[in-house]
View 1 (cartoon, each protein chain N blue to C red):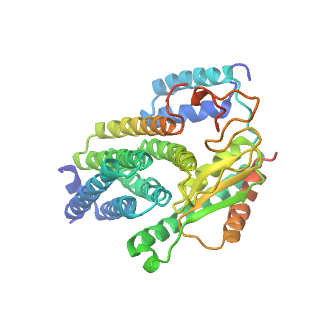
View 2: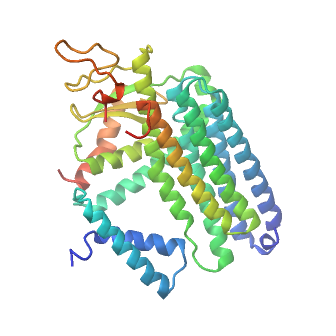
Length: 143
Length: 93
Length: 163
């Protein structure tokens, strides 16, 4: 806590603002995660934390560390870029996993698979003249 | 004056992020279905990473930043492999 | 030259990443350059498909548009979560959107944009019919979403990455 006492106000105020903004948005995202009722709604909530929640906190850290070191320290950008690239991957994966499981279970309100020539939709029986797939992993997948 | 503002903001950010991690953990423990639990785990990882960054600011040590990066990478790998498991029932084909 | 440095952009990005993670000095510059050059040669060994970028300025414009949209939808979703969705009248739903994009690179970029914006989530893309299944947190008219994605993001992406 020692080095924070020598901070001028024009550094401290924006850093404090970005910290509070980022933490509040992250908290709101998780409140949504806990409160919303359907999984697909909950899928939206954590993106609050990974977009401006993370950006606020990383910006605050960037400003503060750059000032105390006396040079531009931008390695928080690496975390920011990493989050920007990985969050869509995890969210898309989770969305697809949920959709896949809901389709197999036949949950109402879920759009059926788009008609495709090569992939059977859900747990359908194999067409005649074709051996049933012994192992589900051998069946043609969606990817 | 600026020390007061900073300690207030840092304290608030730490408490809010800890609370956020708890809410993510709530979904991880009670989420009705498996995908809810994985989503809770992902949120938990991200908030823990941000908490480490904030703690690094408070302590003034660069090592928390490295720890935060490791947490981020581990969280990504964990979530993707779990989601893959949910789709296909196995991770490595 | 192209055999020595097959992916110049990737080499530069990796070198920049190395310098960001360490501090700038001559030794780090040389070391980082060596690592970046080796890594880009390793990437060339698996022969990824070349990405043709025609108009970089369109991407810059897209970046600012998306930044603004993310800020706006952050505020909107945060308010919806706090107020419980305008006295419970908020409803979410799935939307199918026909896409004109076909190449993997702009599609990946579009996926990043849609997922990074709170309020929309990319659920599934079908490459045979080229339709995108989207989940929207606060549903307005379906046609509005089709128009929004089509004019705001997709046209700029088509401009930047010609087929």
